Amino acid sequence: MYALKKVYLYQHPTFKKGERTVGYVRKQRVNRPMFVVTGYARSKAGLLRYQVRDVNHQYRHTDGRTGYITAKSSYVRPVYYQTKHQTVTVINPQGVNLYKNKNRTQRTRHLRQGQLLKVKRIVKHRLTTRYQLSNGNYVTANRKLVKLGTVTYPKYVMAKGALNRYQTVNLNKKNRHYQRKQRAIFKVSYTDYSRNTSNRLTGVKRYKVAGGYISGNPRLVTNLYYQGRPHSRQVRVIARSGIRGYQHQNLTGRSYKIPKGKVLKIRRIIVRNGLVNRYQLTNGHYITANKTFVKTK
Image 1 (cartoon, rainbow, N blue to C red):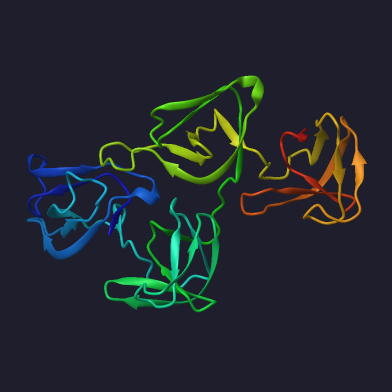
Image 2: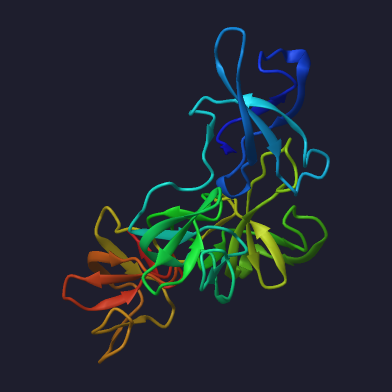
């Protein structure tokens, strides 16, 4: 099981505030506290409780503790998917491995955060489940590591103003400062969260970039590429030397020059899984959706 909201570990099935041994704050999905259910019990009022063991190895002072937690479905949920889904996305910041066998032997490939996987079926292995992919390999069905459907992560972000880079995910040990006029652009290796070894602090979004970590606060950084079609269905070219229009969405084929200041009418946006999006114009051609080249009206 893993916790969806703030939960406490109690000494006995009938919960009393004075018998709380550990508190676990609400965390982002990839860092949610996890427990192994070792038994069941009921409170004096007949409420179901889970008897559990803490298996959060990152929480050194709580790892291995035992006790009771609520069994309310709004607070806890099975950490492994129990049904098949058509697609899942890797959400673990460190990625996941593919294996030839369901018992996780003979690793075949490492998958990075954001990769979309096509599922063939779900299989059980002891107390866990695995997804068998269309290529026959197996991947975990742990909800902390994969999520059903498509999940997008920014591949490039841009600083809105001055910004610092740090050595750690908790933004300790500053190792570079970027001035406001630089409008610094970063290639994102993965999205992570601070305080991932604390059961008392929630944590906030960070981006792993070359040389360290930067804040994921939307007031400080923004996706380098637009993620939707503008309400006005128009963009203005702002690049000093203009941009080019192309025949194909991967920006290939015969091209033509579009000067700075030109207003273009947009038909739709081509979203490429949080990477480098494109706009299709009403004339059928394609341009970049990079915010340093075009600006929505």
